[in-house]
Length: 391
Ligand SMILES: Cc1ncc(COP(=O)(O)O)c(C=O)c1O
Image (cartoon, rainbow, N blue to C red; front, side):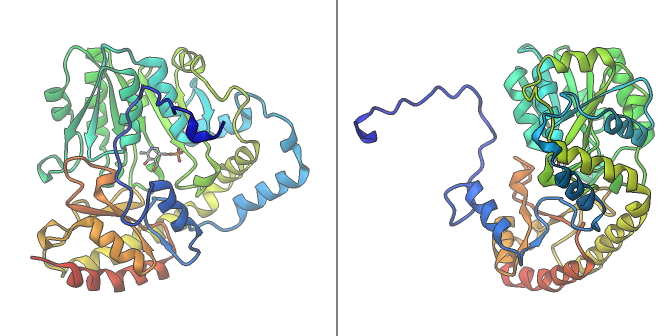
């Protein structure tokens, strides 16, 4: 029987993801990303990835491939050396690490293991919505708290948390520094969140994916032990996004609960683990220089934006490797801007990827790329504004 003779049965949609309209001219977001990826000349400012590494991490992986140990399965919970190096990086003691395929898998497992249908979860808007989508599968409600305002420094504050939580709030998501804005938390604020969490028996999910780009960074685990989940990624400062490795760090009882939810029971990519070990061991060699390049890159962008009427940086300096450029005062639709820039070989991201309520106001750009590429952006962006301006 040919395919068309069947009645193709559509499954019930058990889960709903935040709906994304494919970019103009594409049938799916995947086709779009594949096109971007395949274009070797595209300047990569659309994914907060890091393009500044030398060959240290790559060489460690090439060596590991040469030894061909990849034909064996790795130890299911990862190399102990790697787990210890992660704990050392965070200066944590007496905690457990679960390695996963990127921080993304950890985020999913945490939600699956810890949330119940009667729970609600607090997340900011703008924010990283994949986390909200995962929480939505297991909790009754995700409360997106609008934070795109100067009065709260473009971040979820302890005050906003108190105003938005109730007796069913089970988890607070602190993305620190925040994707997309680059706002981050002071030690005082984290202590306040910890206090609220302790008084109300909440989990604090502290996603520190961008921590190493921050001028200063603090860990809420130190103030709310036993109820914090620290989410760790090798995709950003280590420049290993395509290798898909990350993890979650927490107390033993919490990690034991999460382990029960594990899908990838045969372990995490072994080559990625060798790369991650090399990244952590060599960090002191490249870390400061890489941060300096990022600080300089965002300074150049800020200098370029300053004189443009109707356009501003809500958060500057950013504590991440990305920032938001607000275009609303110039009457520019961020989608039009990102399409325009793609024609100039500059891949950036319109706001709707990270905000329901404010996505029509801003473009998100990342700047952990060579300074000469930032200079191309700084040359093209003012021209783009003048070409698209309606106000
Ligand atoms: C806040 C945040 N958490 C997690 C991730 C994904 O991390 P990974 O690549 O390790 O899965 C991202 C990716 O952009 C992110 O912005």
